[in-house]
Image (cartoon, rainbow, N blue to C red; front, side, top):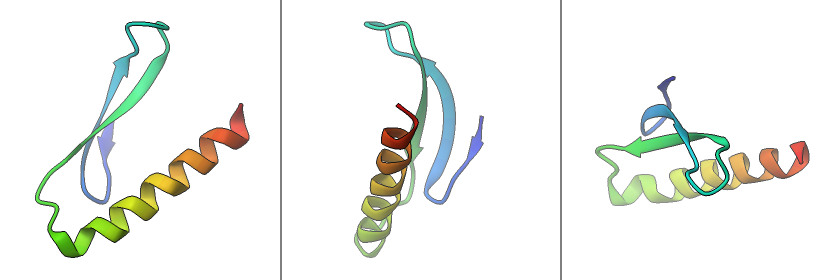
Length: 52
């Protein structure tokens, strides 16, 4: 699908629900980046909650 702040993003399928999902593979994430990565994940979760 593309790349993000911390790695590559791929399209996948949840095998239990058959829904399409985005899968992010994080590469080269140093300890100093953990807070940024956590913040990004919280933003994504918040966005997904507004869509459902």
